[in-house]
Length: 133
Image 1 (cartoon, rainbow, N blue to C red):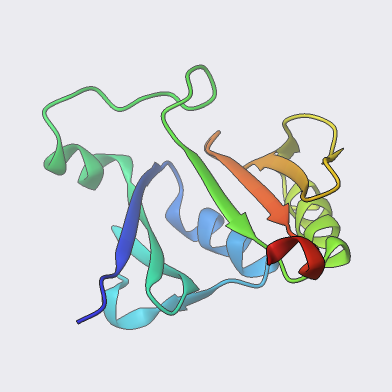
Image 2 (image 1 turned 135 degrees about the vertical axis):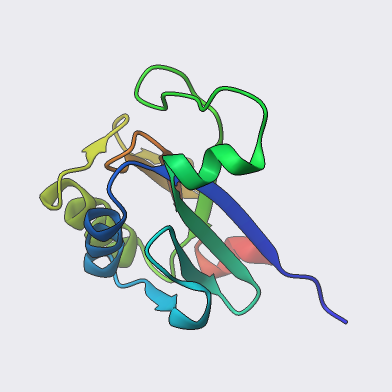
């Protein structure tokens, strides 16, 4: 059996957050989506559960982090090309997100990052094919 990963992130406005990520070309598994949570499909076995803050509080005795002020997690995803990476970050900004820093080209890897509507940081990377080996 292969494992799956579900990254759980609290969000303030679920419909707005879903629209943000749909604009970035992500789909949702509607079987695991309702008015309190949405299952965003990142890959075959990788998902982000976007959960309203009220519902998220049911899963933890700790205070929910304000990701606009503190870093709770860095989610890193890869893109199939440098152009796709740049398009994703540009679309994130167009949808109300913001860049976290300038893009960096390390030769073996190109990276950039954006902050979503709730302040979660998404690292976006591209590995040139010759470097992936």
